[in-house]
Image (cartoon, rainbow, N blue to C red; front, side, top):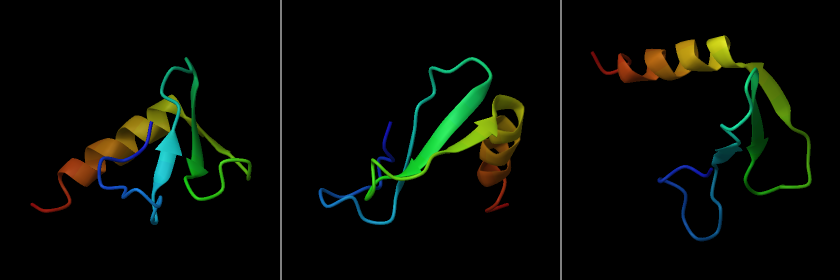
Length: 56
């Protein structure tokens, strides 16, 4: 899944694969064959929740 802010050329975006049960795989959209970070689902959820409150 690629960010809705990503342009046609990939830009500076990340891709995630949310279907995993225990981890969220994250990679750079410009290098799909490059390294992947595996982030615990609970940590990813906390990170995403913190983004929602960043502008408050």
